[in-house]
Structures are given as structure tokens and as C-alpha cells.
Amino acid sequence: MILCDTNIFIHAFNGDKNTIEELNRIGHENIALSVITVMELYQGMGNKKELEIMKKRIRDRAIISYPK
Image (cartoon, rainbow, N blue to C red; front, top):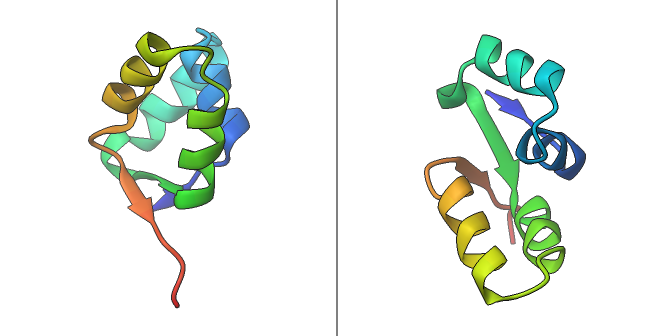
């Protein structure tokens, strides 16, 4: 499992071909994001429509939370 930071997802969602190719090479089933990354992605959305699109984009990703 590869834990990707916010900037990786932003590059991919903005259509960066190199990032998309690397994520495809790794395999989407092997990519995770942290709860912090989720929060950062949500904070970057400008309106409710963008937020809903982002939620759909990351819905099937593994999300890693931190121990209490």
C-alpha cells in the first residue's frame, strides 16, 4: 500500500499525465490517503458541487486514520 500526500491527488485530479501514469502503474487498489489528506482536499473545494465531486473521486480509496 502506498500512502499518497495531498499534492499527488491534486496533480492527478488536475490531469497531470505523469502523475496519472504513475498512479496507474502502482494500481489504484494499492493507493491510500490519510484522514489529514482527506481534510485538506475537502478544504480546497470552492463550493458544494466541487466537494461532492471530490467525495466521489476518493470514495473507493483506502483511508488511513491515526490511532487514538
